[in-house]
Length: 405
Image (cartoon, rainbow, N blue to C red; front, side, top):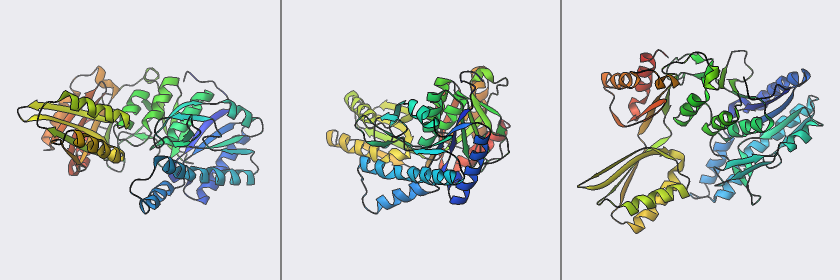
């Protein structure tokens, strides 16, 4: 599969549902012990147990509506630290030489906002030293340390990023285990789509970015940049999973690989009674400053003035409200609406590059089923639509049926 050394080392990541209780942790420990008995050395990246992170956030809501980001990052990282401690204790009890490490101890250096920082680099020597005396290194996902020595988090899905980044630093493959048996054409809870044996990095990045929720987008981007294959499978299951790898290593190319539904988005509309380029410049400067990622942008300029609409992740609501407070103080006539009753439906497939008729088939499917859409955007391998929340599921079902997923 190219690009990584064939060694007896692997990086394995277990998600929150896989480590939700002590029974599951014990079962994982036995699995890891069996693998070390085969001569493997393992880096095991874990998330917080079950709903721990949600519970911590709920506690904070009882205290304040606007917590300090540095304090919040410090609190949220305690979830993963519990998991690595428990797993390390159980592994040692089973006779496995183990070392537990926080993101800081693992040499994961970050930059950016405390709550969604990016990994700058990883000190692989930390792992080399640990493997001199250990067979399993258990690492807290989702966290690192910035240049000021402060603990930071990597944002939603950050443990995936931790795992793939470590695999890239060590030049080994990465296995990610969760409660689903691989990547499907769409969420199997919505439509009984087939499981995919192989998916390209590009398709997986689009599916993740557009709401598939299987893997964090940055983790796939890192894997692509360093040509690290990712195996996605169900925890402790014999069922075959999905390999995510370079497109040129996948023989069969389909026009459409998957359909994604993103419910975790807001639809924002800004209006201003005149076309003011200074306002637009200020808006985008603030969006960059607050690290708010927006997409599906449309702009209208007419006799009524300026109107700009875009979609964004609902996790950035606090930042966008802060931006609009600043803008309205400088541009009092500015009006904005944040709507939460829309979803984004996306059709993804690398075959779109070479096969005609995909866009027209998508449009006709939505029109034939009387599903209105309000905004459309395309990339080389995807087409996305904003539709009413109540039509999201039907749109996914009809598109999966149309493309035989």
